[in-house]
Length: 230
Image (cartoon, rainbow, N blue to C red; front, side, top):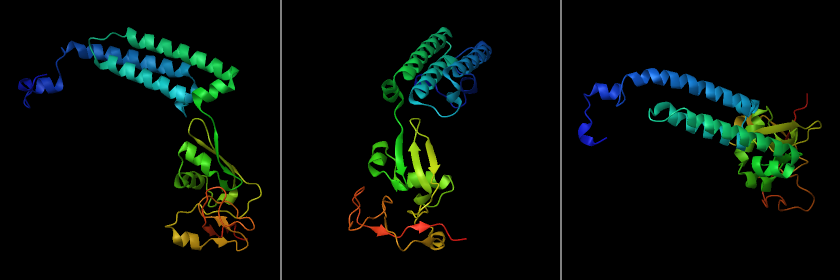
């Protein structure tokens, strides 16, 4: 629209737009059809679309949303386009699901693979760098599970969907605090283990004659915290 046709007192253009009023009756029909289409699509794309999405599921939903959004508000576009798009998406998802079931290599290629970020209370620094998870992001996930130090963590996985799964240690040992550095009052309440040293950067348990951490190459060692004696 040219600038000369834009006036702030043109309330008809602001409220109604350049489409005839009858289009808003059609808009109600389009909305009902698109709503039903998306509901149908999400049902047959799988239950996980209502929870955590994999790569292929996210791509399918994004494609469907982009297509339906354009058709919904554009009076010159018909409803056949999103129906075709949904049909193609369903065929792709059916093919991907079958291939995922038959080939683990294909599943890893399409959906990604799980990463192990903590093993026996020690952060896997190289794996964290690969998946671009920082130390603070990892600690946030640990604290979310109600855990205050890494000695309580047996495994922390980052799933292919991007979610985290934590398995607690059945035989806890002293570990690197997951408490933020600025919460000095809470840190001071914790009981430290004077017989152990762990890497301040990744939580690696210092072995005899180790001056540099073999995991992250840090030279800073601290006393880990442990469960308080009851």
